[in-house]
Image (cartoon, rainbow, N blue to C red):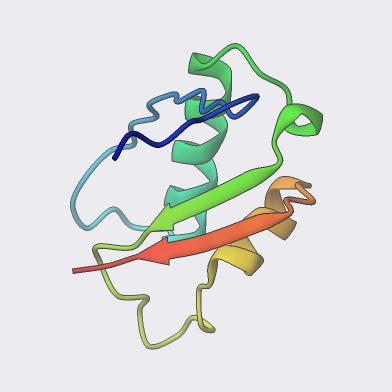
Length: 88
């Protein structure tokens, strides 16, 4: 069966951040930097984003609050209609 996709698009950008234990950095700061870099890489503005999927590989440190895709999207100034999180 072939699925018909009409008027549905995904524009993907890639954002990198430094890796490892970096003094003064929080999990949120890494997510914000990577997301901002990915948005710029895709040639988009925050107002262009209608969906947000976050991947969390490293757990937040004990001094941080829960880091959810909603938290990251809000900190980026996004108002997506679709939010999801993937983790391993």
